[in-house]
Length: 147
Image (cartoon, rainbow, N blue to C red; front, side):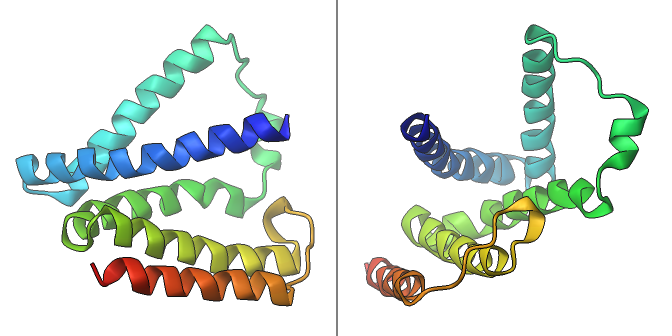
């Protein structure tokens, strides 16, 4: 199962690059990063709705909805921020630099989240190997940004 999940995560990463290009094209067409991001989310909502109906996913009970921690409801804000920012930054930075920098940001956040066991992730200490991996990624960002 771990191999399949890693493959799906890899496919999701591939999709992020394609998504940035599509959203940047919409931004150019519409003249607005916000409008491009809104279209992105509306299409995503439609796709998820079709998926949930096809899978016959039951609607959660009210008690389940109000039982979720308040901060869990804010995940969409980060998604909207990401989509809006990369829609603007992608065409200026290029796909390689954009994704290298965003992956670096993800790794830094992951180190902090893992160290503290936040957001439902198991606590995993920051190790020298993990910090070295981040340092190597910084070097990679520098190399890919040099052209």
